[in-house]
Amino acid sequence: MDLALISFLSFFALFTLVGVTASFFKKNNIDDYFLASRDVPSWMVALSYGATISSGATFIGFAGLAYSTGIMAFFVVAGLTVGDHLGWLIAGHKIRRKAEDTGARTYPSLIGKLIDGRDYQVVILLVAIMTVIFMGMFCSAQLVAGAKVGVVLFGWDYNLFILAGAAVLLAYCWAGGIRASIWTDTVQSVMIFVSLAVLVYVALDDIGGLYGLYNSLHAIDPALVNPFQSKFIVLFLSWIAFGVGVLGQPYLMVRHMVAKSDESLVAARRIYLCWRWAVLVLAILVGCIARVLIPIDDGGFDAELSIPALWQNLLPPAFVGFLVAGLFSATMSTADSLLLSASSALTQHIFPQLRDSYKLARIGTVVVICLVVMIAFLAGDNVLSLVVLAWGWMGSAVAPLVIICLFGGQPGQRQAITIMAAGFGMTVFWRYGLNLNAALIDIVPGMVTGFAVYFVHLALEKYVKSNTFDVK
Image 1 (tube, rainbow, N blue to C red):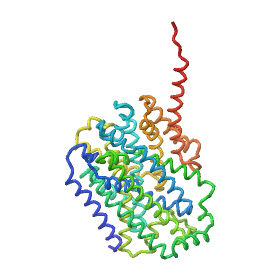
Image 2: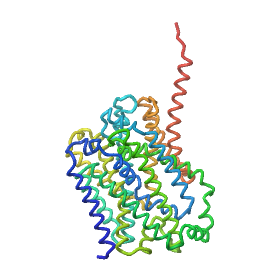
Image 3: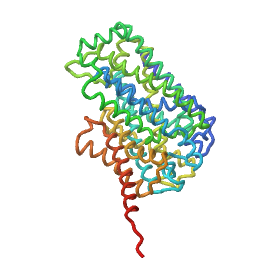
């Protein structure tokens, strides 16, 4: 067994140990399994949120994007960060406070209570079904990301890597629920940052710093150093919408729900945004560096493997294992949260007879991980595309409704269902009917359509009232 594999397995075992250790601090009830008893401190909320949102797409997808497009990828980072910040500002303390006031255990149940505190059961059920399906797709993308790297670096069987990742996820999610997820996320967030920072430092030194990187990219293709290409405005605006789409993602919004207080969320937002910006910039730099050091050959280089390819070329085997563990930190920290979000939706809403059983809630986690593995086996291997698809569909359906309610809107259940159906339907039509997703990411028309349905309804309602006369 070589040093890289030994190093990787050692850190992988560490993450599993941290998650299992969290089980000794748990309470054997539903609220602790899904919400960690709502007592998580701000710094853990921030780092857990950061590790969770920085999925395999950060290491695999964004680096691949930078490899293909050059420094224009920084517009993705800028747009995503702006949108993400807007999402935090819109949600603020409102999500946490409303979850506490209504006693909501899950994000679907919170959405069903957002309007006036009543349970809109059909809304809750629809959001729960979407959570199981789309969060399952998203979770499978994390296993795919890990498997792709495992195949390249260790020569392991693709399916074996998926099964191994799923087994570790199940082990600590079964043992400690969301508390285990948050604890491992916190450790993994440090690993993610350190692994990217080390790789950028070593690689930049190899090619003559940022100035050498710029010149090398220009020599390969001047377009790689032209940030103002034809699509840069569309790209920037699209990823702002993608960032705001966090409001439609149960696995992220539950991080607001577990916080200790409103004040702790302010500190959490500041810590998280600094961490997030740094990690995304480092990932884009790695992709650009890989374009210089690993030219495109006739056989075709998989751009999404630019980071592991650099590891093999630049670093000693023992350190490669450490960095692979950093990549798996990104995939696992997202996957465990997705798994628990889908599991909670399944056991709390789709099969409500399991709602108050701690044992059956954990069995629901097993059912969901089986679904995730099946999707991973059947899905294509483009990680960023799978993430964009799952995130966009969920965000388009749910985010407009959440934003409307948080700003005081009062749609009834039928109207809420129409908003969700219109947003989701437009994303599907935009991608598969019009084939325009390459020109504009489909979450944008999806969210616009959701808002449009609500405001058209308000306008029609106002018109009907203004043209109603009493007849005596």
